[in-house]
Image (cartoon, rainbow, N blue to C red):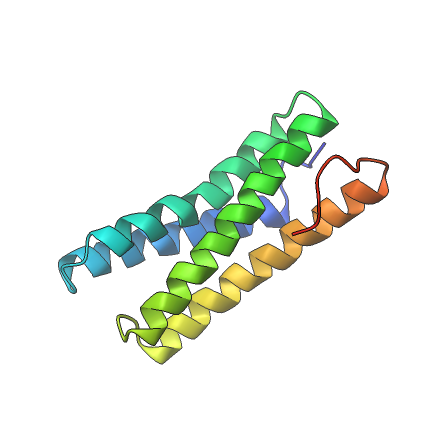
Length: 126
């Protein structure tokens, strides 16, 4: 259903790498393990679910994986805002990560909207 090389897979993988580095920073420099693990889980799950969507067995399976990816991106956006607003992250780093996350939300949202427009109304709007 998705092309093997596409912008979502590329950008979600790059975001996942950034999130792993953020987790390392939070663990090593800030001695935070709780929020760090939350952002690690949600931030890397975006790409893993997009990858699973590539191997979907049906349109319904494809949509389900992308919805999970979208929800994980929403969660990541929450944790990044929280880290920014509690001064765990510098404003520049927070802005950069939030921009990347928002870009992923737009890409995934656009794919979901297109797919829904093709007759699948089994998922509700977010």
